[in-house]
Length: 182
Image (cartoon, rainbow, N blue to C red; front, side, top):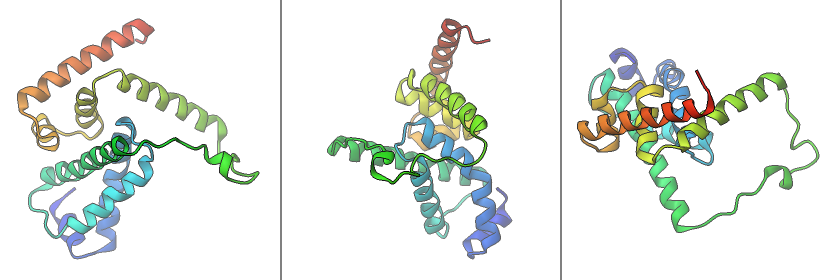
């Protein structure tokens, strides 16, 4: 994200806000999914509402901007976990609440199934890690943040982030070996 786009977004330019969303929506959504957020699309919307509301106060360069956006996403994860810890909820299948077309899908069903299988496998692998390891791996790989940026997002030291990354990658490698993944 370059300075001109950020400056234009501060002024409310629609093209700049769209550019920010286009650049960061997929990694933010992936981070939220990987962290096990119940409704990642809704949480991603909240992240971008937070971005738009906070743009005026943001200070920094392009690198700082990406770190700032993922800090907002990380806070949404923490907010959800706190909310769920205070109030246990029983999930309800939307198909039970809706009419006969509730389960109807449109589009390429085969591709949707393959996407879900791949996503399910990745989510399962991430859930085998500790929450901190998972956060570090997602922020380093999916969000493409540096070790320093991840430390800023998570509020951890550089050494802690490096250690979490090393242990998380080692755990994933062991998991892949057990499953015969090359």
